[in-house]
Length: 212
Image 1 (cartoon, helix red, strand yellow):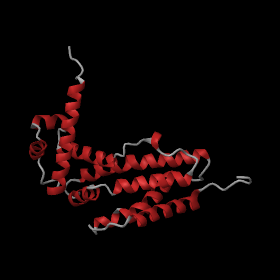
Image 2 (cartoon, helix red, strand yellow):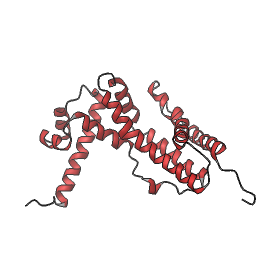
Image 3 (tube, one colour):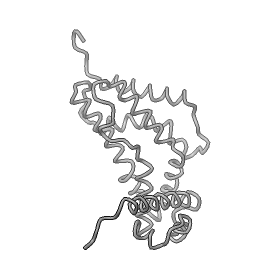
Image 4 (cartoon, helix red, strand yellow):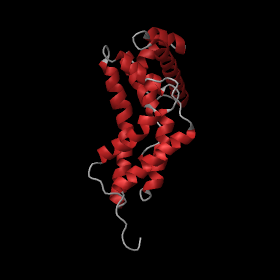
């Protein structure tokens, strides 16, 4: 009869998984995807190859996990701003998006995907489906909640989400792909977020009713 792993063994497995992800991330950033072997990752993480293969049977599966972790914010739909205050809600989401895009290593992770895409197209699939889309969908659901609350009038919430996130990432993130030292100051970044919120409100805010 099998028994469930103890709390100690679960904690130990989580620690090993975290060590593997950290070591793999460092090596991928330093030597690229193709130049990093699972054996080297296991050595760097100070775990056995058997332990690594148990958690991640392939290098692609390990990269998927790194991408998913890089996009995680520790938040879900329940922690999004409540619907009803479009300006405040979008401002909060916009600033969280900035914090996500400017995390150490985020731009470098994208560079790996772009550099290796011709040989390993699955890396692009991982970045899109494991990282970008889950985050994108969480913002889209927020806009759908605002629509249900009557604060916005929008037919295509996917397009609206693309517009909002694109206005921010086009200034904060994408120049880093060609300009490694691109680092606008906080005031400039907050101004871009504020302007993106104003643009969204101008385009989609529901007309005010008499007496509002």
